[in-house]
Length: 270
Ligand code: SF4
Ligand code: SF4
Image (cartoon, rainbow, N blue to C red; front, side):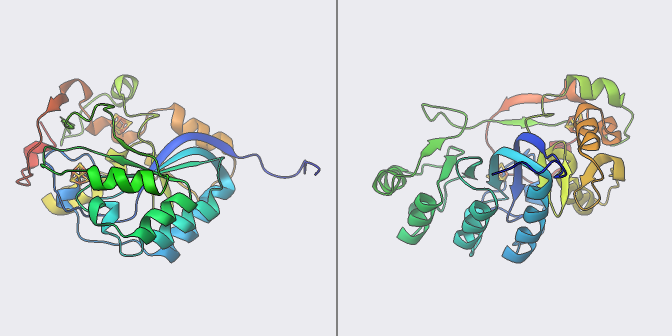
């Protein structure tokens, strides 16, 4: 095999997450994808495939988080998992579903076989819902699929953080970017756009529901159909974006207990 010197180099990302449905069967207060405010949407296999094929021609990625909303609500989940694995081969890319687990015990054998065949891991966000996951762990063992609680080895209940949006957009965007913990950890991809964080990538749910205009400009994301060279991607990830002016990072509150959202604007703003 010879190396083609004219072949364009790809940009390397450690991780990004993406949505395959926009809504959820839980609707947690403070959800950082603004899911309780989202309209129901199931992303089609065709649209996902088109965007991810293009993305894979520009970037290498080590891990992808398949999320929503709640990804297990998607009726074509198996086709979608196969599609991801075809585009992002094993072992170069780890693929994991992030689920609240409500539907996990009722997923059929074909789902577990699909996870096994395509090397899909499953992370459960364990909310205080009184779900016995023993059937899921039995299936995981039977089909040799890795299933873990997300963020807690021993399976403590998940807590939430409140993001503290500044609706007036008067924060110093460079300062906020400097202190933001999301950058590098919450890269998000949706509809052909790569975002630095899930906040800017999902803000349309908030804007539409509350009739606000926290503006997303063309500098706030990378349009993967318009990439000229990978230096631009690096610059995007290294530098603040205009949208950072809407985040009051020091005002964020962590470790809040789980509650169902009443869709109050103050749950996301301060
Ligand atoms: S389960 Fe996850 S995606 Fe669904 S509302 Fe809660 S935090 Fe958001
Ligand atoms: S917009 Fe900027 S400050 Fe806000 S979460 Fe994203 S990277 Fe952080």
